[in-house]
Amino acid sequence: MTSVIDPQLELLSVIPTTVLPALELPDTSRRSISSPLTSPPTSSPLNSGSTAGSVNPPAVSPVNDVDSTPRSPKESPPSSTCTAVSQPVVRHPRTILADGVTYQVLHPEDCPDAVTIGEHPKRIFGKNTKSVVGIKRAADETGWSRWEKKRRIIIDSKLCPHPSQGPQSDEDDEFYFTNEPLPTWLNAEREFQPDGRPGVYIVKPSEEDFKNRFEEILEVLQPIGERLGAIKIKVPDACLGPPLPYPDYFAKYTAEHGKDPKEPVIYTMNQYLPLHPHSSSSLAPIYKIFSTGRHLIPISEFSHPLEQQSHRSHIPEKNLLFRGRTWTQILNGNPGGEVQYSSDNDAETDLRSYLGLSDPELCKLPGNVLFQAKNRVTGIHTPYLYLGNAYTLFALHMEDYSALSINYHHGGASKSWRVICPLDFWKIEQLVQDTQRIKPNCSQFVRHASVFMSEEALKTAGIRSIGMQQRKGDLVCTWPMAYHQGWNEGPNICEALAYGGARWKDVFINKDPEAVYKACGEPCEKAGHGLAIRLQFEADGSTTPIPNTQTSLEAPQVMKQEPSIKANGVSEKATEKASEVA
Image (cartoon, rainbow, N blue to C red; front, side, top):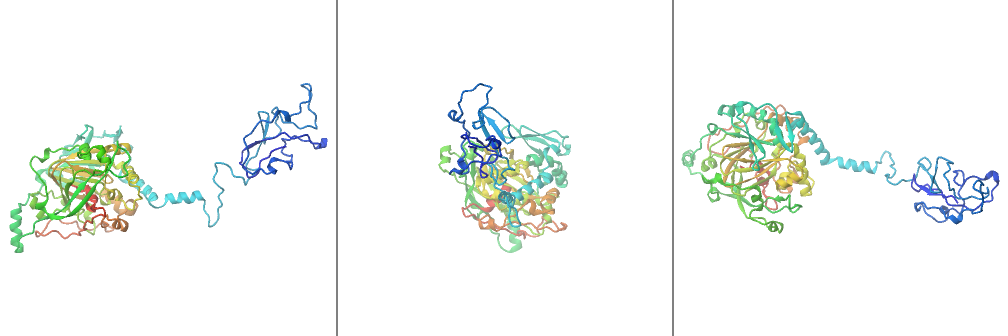
């Protein structure tokens, strides 16, 4: 009998033709059993209980079913006997002969309703129907994923042009700048990283150039900042406002107000560095910065042994991460020793005078378009002071609205930085997403995560970064989309302020702010990440910059966004403003 394929079976599959017994048919009606015109008999296996889809692999026909009557090689078998075909005979394009067995092949046009293996189910389109694949693809392309792709295209094309379009080249994951030398008035040179590799550029302008050409300095260094993520500027001593001795401040305040001033207060908290619960590699660990007990205290109660020899303190990254622990202790949940840190303190006159600090006058630096905003936010429009101790650190983050940051080192031990290449901003964001195992709600989700990445973790993820040390008198400028983290190698004091240039404003403010930056909202506030920071600008940017002068010794009237404490005890400002840790 002939075995023909059922319409419900696989398309383009083949089945063997079994041997039929001799049939008494008229001579004029005899046809080959492999002919597609032959109708299957009622005793066909497909009609005797076999189900669609249960076709067995092809098999060779048994020998004893073939007519074995002796005859000469040239003699043909009787026409009344049907036997299995033993030699390839092309009878019809839809039959295949292999190993003495005839196979019948069905093409899609023969059974248009059959389902084939490896093909998706048929899609029925109508007014109110969509394909399953189309619905899934649409779901993947909506929401955060779609916004993220659009954001990356805008940033890559406008803020960080591709390296091939610039004068620099990338060799062995290290940037070497082969363009024309920088202007001589910058007195620029390239430093080395602690491991001996090429580091960031440091420029040493004159007093006049620093005060009047700061915007031009950033513009000239733009191609470098876009690749390395940061540069250093040596601030001339003549550009620093003289410090106001605290006794003089005390006497002046008493004369103006008829009462003695209160002792300045600062924020303080205790820091720990446990292993991140989702860190999966001992060779590339990821840590979680954990802070507790953030509160205000009189500055005289803060332990801060700042001495003349503090600048000699040095803590390599490996020592920072181990913090006196063994790897076994880290795996067992040992968070490391407790260290005290003070961050996000308003740089008001009383505190600056008490600490004996000069004023670098960061608010007066030209070209800062952030002062065109209608609203004022502390830490963005006014500087913050940071009092660091050995082993205190700041988490991986970027600035609010992806702005630049300027961080001045007043004195004490070095501050070590790890800055991510701005071109790899999407890689570090993906790494944090994978580590946190959450879907982000805002552009500051990396800051909210409060993580510290080891250099090995960054290298494993293919993320380029650069290390540098900031010392007394150094002004560190980080670029938009340059995520950064770091630690204090001993007691020190730093001061920081946000900065926005013309190119930054064109990308993040003028066109479509929501296309490249999602400010924190209600979900962030409910999660304990603090108040949402939203900047408002006039359409034409015609606003008056904040003056950096005070008519009295009172603090300037600027909108204060108080930091909130996270549910787990981590301060919003301790992690969100970590970029400006001084």
